[in-house]
Length: 224
Image (cartoon, rainbow, N blue to C red):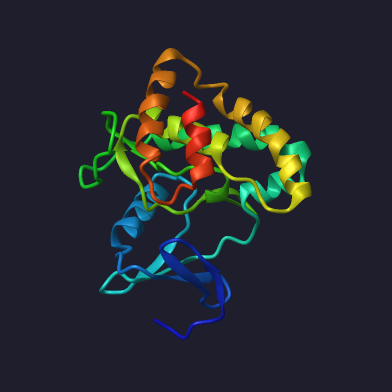
């Protein structure tokens, strides 16, 4: 590992540092290894899926050097270019469809609910999609698992519908309206009784996640 640049972001499980011109370094904050996450990113990339390139992982797994995606998150893009909200929802649906076309490797952990053999991201929402120079790139593969695509789609539905909006009043008002537009565009290819049934299972599971705020949990439960 080389020398670190400045700290540029802090997430729930890692700090992210500049690491040269086109790379970042994620450093674990809770002792969780990034080996499995790096492995699944390399796997989906080998199938043509847009995930960051992995350059190095430390022996203990606590440091991960990966491609830096130069661009805003999908959420920031929606706030700055609201005329694109509908197409961004469509892009999110396409990302789900193309991911679920990939058969999961046997070494990938089984999803906590639902049965199937597809790769699932299980946290695919507008904050985990970067809009890079060549298009959307999916980040944060911490929860990736093997299972039923409907589980992934249902979780995205719940997270888009319940996620807390930015504190900025203008952005909050804009995205409050845009949330419905994006969600309808995202769900258009997937509607059906089986998905709604899976939504109940997904919400019940996600409400036990300590990273969800009381407001988000209340909104998710109101969907059922």
